[in-house]
Length: 377
Length: 233
Ligand SMILES: Nc1ncnc2c1ncn2[C@@H]1O[C@H](COP(=O)(O)OP(=O)(O)O)[C@@H](O)[C@H]1O
Ligand SMILES: [Mg+2]
Image 1: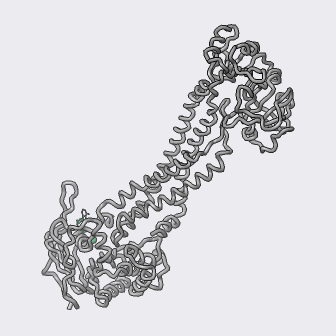
Image 2 (image 1 turned 180 degrees about the horizontal axis):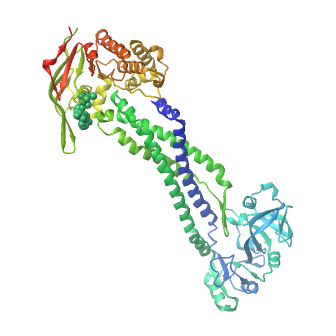
């Protein structure tokens, strides 16, 4: 009975291929949408440090990239009591962040650039310099995953390599790690360099790390210093807001995937329906010569299961190879499609459910009518 | 030849409902079929021949009346029991052979044995013997599409024989064959009946085919036309 199942699939290779293809498309789309959501979720999962507060320009509370904070606010912020302090430095980290094009080995690459001061390491204790040192003027620090974002081999982006930006040459003097955050795909400049190149006298934001102070103290500071036009936002709120901002994109991704998948699923249903209905007489004959309907149903579902397991494996292999290389960037978020074990398991269960679903209607038509009618049609 | 009764139809009526309309292809039919007999069923199109054959073969069930097979009433068996009944007692031969296209002649013949518990060796012996009896052993590895109609029907006959059932039913087994192939098939059926002591019930349109049978019954509008009976000597 098992070989009989396989024979039917081997006999019409084109049809079998169509069945596998349709199922693969459905499963791959589901994997893609799931991996897209997963990747985006992970990239937003810096989710803010509860001890950090971001000072942004009034009216630009939703985007660090768009915000402008006068440089004079930096020294003012350092006077707020209760800010974390380490080795005599206060954890007040002014920074400029934006997306721009850098040139590496003659080619242009889209990258996220951040200008920082050594205080950046005070507000983010999780960040560590893995190799090398902090950049002085004319030098840069690259995130551990920056090579991926630029799409170049890892070994090309090492200490000593040079990157051009706005006609100036910068030498890589170190790499940093910021586990589980998108910071790792950024290129970090010395703040003064970026301010000079972009001719700005303002920064994008100032990040503070609270010691004894509360958020309300910082909020009060912004209200006392109305001249600076600052707005204080808890870092966790900021990323939650970003997450909400990206929610519609995730929903759209799912809707798109589901719409296309529904088309492919319908195609698969149709092909299965036609394939099984063309064997209606054959199934009736099997009943006539003594096969129980349960046994026949098992071969039908068996065939379908075989097709769907193959489709699942195809989709999973494609995803495993392709997804890590697919990078998506929106503004400051940047991620690759991320496969998780639970996503793969969910897709397998979907494949299983589909294998049963596509056989339901034709199996019903082939097995439930009275046998004499089936033999007659 | 044994004279014991294999099948008895008692007041068998079959009613099909089509919407509000009732079709009654069989009405109060009485019939006794002896073990080892070769019976031909004739009658005009729509006279209920296939309906009767299907009821005898446990494919359809009477709406009223009883069908006794080897002394057991099978008219009220459920679908599962009927399937088992067919698997043990019936070999069915169709007008259009109904072989499974993806299987070879050998595999087609082996198919009914898969519902029986036996070893691969036992199966092989049975299949080889059935192919031999149907004179088609030389085509064992051929697929249905590589066979002529007459050869396909021989494979179908081997498939009907392989489980060694007491009853073989055939619905117009020569209806789609040329005269020569038809004759050969009829000779084969007759031989099976007499040499293997099988009971054969065959529906046919062809009076010459009916000539080969031990007995011919004529169906007319769902009842047997008894005056017209012909019994071969
Ligand atoms: N499953 C069914 N449903 C409704 N009517 C049927 C069914 N099977 C047979 N009939 C009707 O019963 C009558 C006898 O059919 P059948 O036994 O196939 O005749 P025959 O084989 O003698 O040509 C015909 O009028 C046919 O239309
Ligand atoms: Mg008929």
